[in-house]
Length: 213
Figure (tube, rainbow, N blue to C red):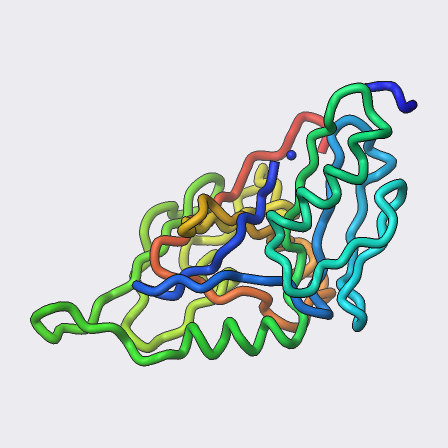
């Protein structure tokens, strides 16, 4: 029995404008799993072509076709026996695989919705925290805005920003989804594909670095 030394960050559905669809994991997606009580269990997990992920102690778990919320519960169920009290498990989307990237791009490029008067609805996203110009950013109907572009419009991360753990927070019909975005990796050329298109109401949070970061 292990001694006792974050909740689902990525909740189940990705809404597109007025209609919401359940978001499910596909092969090629990468999730970040954190166990608060034992950091040795923390790691990134790739959804393999067979639709499964493998984790220490938890073993092999089916991820394909499941929401991140369901994957988190499966991990928690597997780990519960190794802790005195149920551990605190965090599942966060680290990157989208090709299948989900295509799906998200198609959704983001759908025809602009019209209000009752036939006027295209302008989407708004928000950037808060340590950036040059925090506040709302409007997206013209039919246009696509990525996280990196929104950060550029907001003046970029500040000197004391924890730019490797920027969050994109999105309201869903089941709660809130939180995506992780590593700006440092982009600056160093380690990321070649923008993993997320912003949707109306998304909030980008640029946190402050901790004392020892």
